[in-house]
Length: 109
Image: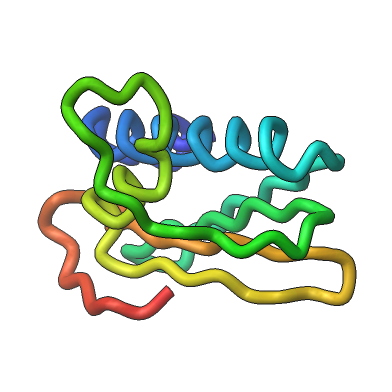
């Protein structure tokens, strides 16, 4: 989908990594169904990964030796805007990325 939208390869790679990390977190920690939404809004890509758990997301700084626990850290590092919204059935982690490197990108998820 991102290729069809003309999203640059590096940004598409970041998006794929972040969605994969968030879906993995939902599968491993929430153990519920997972729903992924992707939208393009002009020069902004918006992503939402929802699960059925009320367990809160925690930003941790992983040690260099750690083999897990990097998902939210990578999200915080690569996305200029992300948040978590509590829903009636669990939570949704939302993040945004610029659609291209030249985009005038303001931070707000």
